[in-house]
Image 1: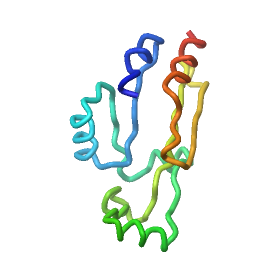
Image 2: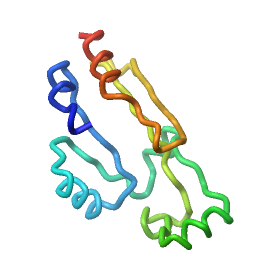
Image 3: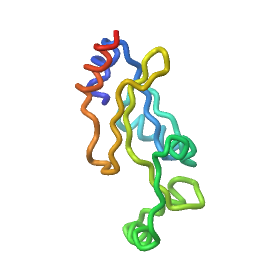
Length: 123
C-alpha cells in the first residue's frame, strides 16, 4: 500500500492500517518500512472482534504456531490465541462502505488499483 499511497491520496483517499501488534511493535514496523500513513494498534483485537474479523485457533494449530516460536497470546496481548482476518475497506464521506475485501488467507490482499478505482468512482 505504501507504494500506491500517492495514487490513493490523489484519488481523495486517506490510508489507515490497523495492526494486531502492540504499539511498540507497530511503531517498529512503521519505521522499518518507512510507512507514511497511520498504522493503529489493535493489540487486544477489540476492533477485529467488533467487525467480525477474528478467529480462535484450534488448540492443535496453536501448539504448532508456538512450536515455530509464535505465541499469539503474548504477541497480541490477549488471553486467547486469536488471529485477525485481513480486510480492506473503502468508506465514503457519508460513512458507507463502498468497497470491501475480506479473505481469511492473509496472502490474498486487495489490489491497490481496485482501491484507487473505487476512490475515483466516488469523487
